[in-house]
Amino acid sequence: MEPALREVTAFPGVTAATGTADGAAFVFQGDKSVPIVVRGLDRESADPIYRITPRIVRGSAGLGGQAVAIGTTLAAKLRLQPGSPMRISLAGGASEVFTVAGIFDFEVEQLNESWVIMSRQRSAALFGYDGGVTSIEIQVRDVFAANRLAQRLRSNFPEFKWSSWMESNASLLAALQSQSSSSLMIQVMVIIAVALGISSVLAVSAVQKVRQIGILKALGSTTASISRIFLIQGGLLGLAGALLGCGIGAGLAYGFIYGTSMATGRPLFPLSITAGTYLTSMLIATGVGTVAAMAPARRSARLNPIEVIRNG
Image (cartoon, rainbow, N blue to C red; front, side, top):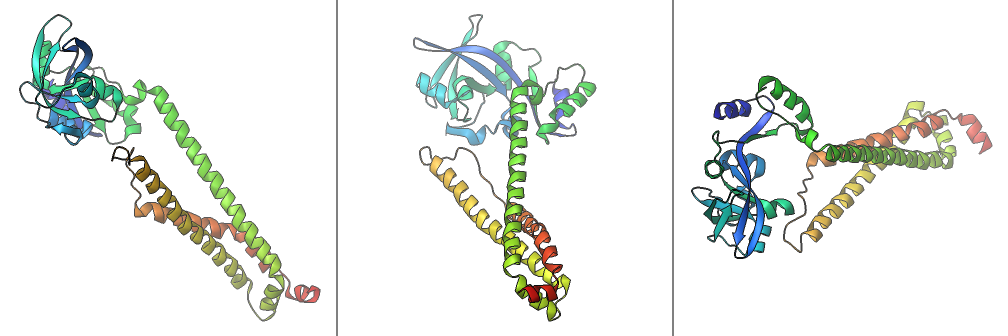
C-alpha cells in the first residue's frame, strides 16, 4: 500500500494524499458507552487535508504511542481533558487504554462527537490490519474535476476502488449547482435592471436638454462629441454606483461576520474580499453604464439643430 500511496501523491491533479486506518469502536467512561469512529492518520500527510494541528483547541496534536485526539463534543460528554485516560473497546471485546493528548474542533458536530484520531500505525495494530491502511484519501486541485480524476485513477490503479465526493454527495452537488445558477441569474437580472435604469435617466436628460444639444450642434459640435458626452455620463454613473455599492456591500458583509462572531469569538465562515473583486465590480458597472448610454447618445446625436431651435 505504501508504494501506491506515494504514486497517488505524485499523480497529476492531486495536491495531497494520506493513508488511513479506520474502524468502529466504543468508549467506556464510568457507566457511559459511546460509539466512536477511530481514525488512524499520519498527521504530517493528513494536515493539508484535515488541518488537524490548527484545529487543536486544547492540549497538543502529538499522536505518538497511546496518544489520541478527540472532538470537543465527545470531550464534554465524557468529561475528558488533555491527559485523561480513555478506554477504547472493540466489538470483539478487546480493549486498550489511551491518553487524550489534544481536543480538536472541526466545527462539524458529527465529527466532534464521534472521531477519535490516533496514529495510523497504532490504529492498524489495534484493529489488526495487515496492510496498515484501509483507504487512501486525496485532495484535488479542482474540486469539480473530481469525477474525471477518479476515472483516471481507476485506469491507473484498477486494484483499488475509487470514488469522488461528487459521486458520494450527489444531492449536495445538485444543491451547489442550483445555488450557483440562481446566483448567476440574480446577477444578470441586476445588471439588466441597472442598465435600464441608467438608460432611462439619460433618456430623460436628453429630452430635457434637447434645446441645449441643438444649440451645441448649431455652433459646430460634432455628432461624435455629443454622443461622447452621454457615454461619459453613463460610465461615470456606473462607476459612482460601483464605488457606493462596494462600500456598502463590504460594510454589510464585515458587519455580519463581526456580529455572528461575538458569541464564540470566531466567524461562522472566512471572508476574503480581494482588490480584484472590487476592480472587477467597477469595470463591469462602468461598462454597463457606458453600454446603457448608447441608446440616448444615438438619439441625441441624430437631432436636427434647425428643427430643435425652431420648435424651441
